[in-house]
Image (cartoon, rainbow, N blue to C red):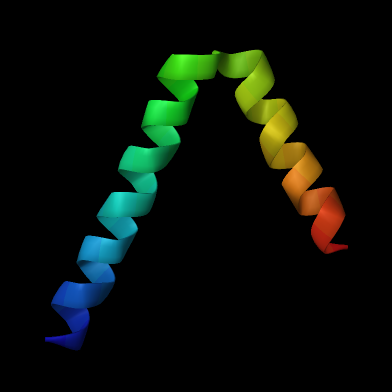
Length: 41
C-alpha cells in the first residue's frame, strides 16, 4: 500500500513537470526549477 502510494505520488510529480514543460517551454521551466532550488538554499 505504501509503495503504491509512493509510486502514484512520483508519477503525479513527473506528469506535473511534463505539463509545465509543455505549457511554458524549456527556458521558463528550467528558470522556475533554478529559482526553486536557489530559494531552498
